[in-house]
Length: 369
Image (cartoon, rainbow, N blue to C red; front, side):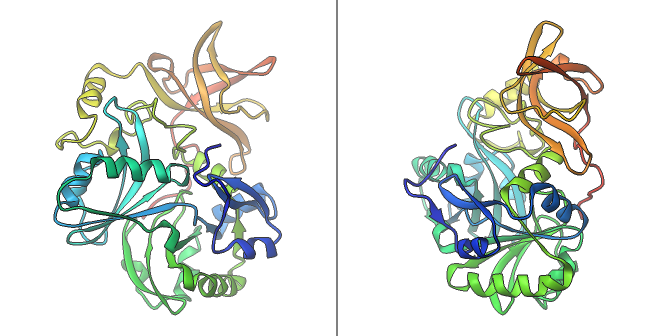
């Protein structure tokens, strides 16, 4: 597990997690709640109702200046010129060889102002990568330590948020953000999430984190709000085939191999474009695909995938899906072996688990606005 800090950091909500009886683990250099009442219970609370996540380990970089847009266009694959103020874009930063530095969100907050939300384990690496390519009239500032981040996720997320803000939530499309008062604190919040459900993510100045937590949890009592740890966050995202950096994508994988071609705009010039364009034209040798696995045994990261006696790939993520009540997995396999409906076997210790390639996402109920 990668850590960004020699001594684990407590988020602004750490004491609240301890009070709530959370099991605390070190993750990406932070002390984080992995679960409160159990992964399955928390997972289903988000699918059926509403849950609250502490995501303060995520990183936030502020990019501003006359050269900000050109800089982001060079550094990321998904054309940021398409962003209006108030919109958000999912994208990735590539290496020259086509591998992925990180996947991230770009918030456009002003005419020449953007916020990048990056993965906790990559925070310092990402900042150094951006800084090493920064030139011209561009300011790059790490705001990560100044903010707490809470996510309110689930089909009833908007009902709870209505009691915390007077802002017209119906007017906020998916992947958009506003700055408004929430729980009496002016802050930036967005309609985004990593669960496949409706929801909001709140970027809270540290000095107001306790006030906002208390307000959200107090209002949440009337909505059966559940506290959610990293364990359920992982099972929720996996059901939606949302990639996890370090498991499903990394420096050795390209966006095209990972099924992320939709966040590549080849009409722009960015680092690694030539490599990705050639891979698109020639077709990648492998693909990240979804597997449903027979039985209740869980395929784990690193397990081999077989077609008969031939190894054709490797599992990147696996879990027992609380929503589907079956084992599911992601893995890279040879492109011609990854067609929908194909059967394979996953090597699990001394036995083979029969599995079938299925169309993503695994969980089909959720629909975005």
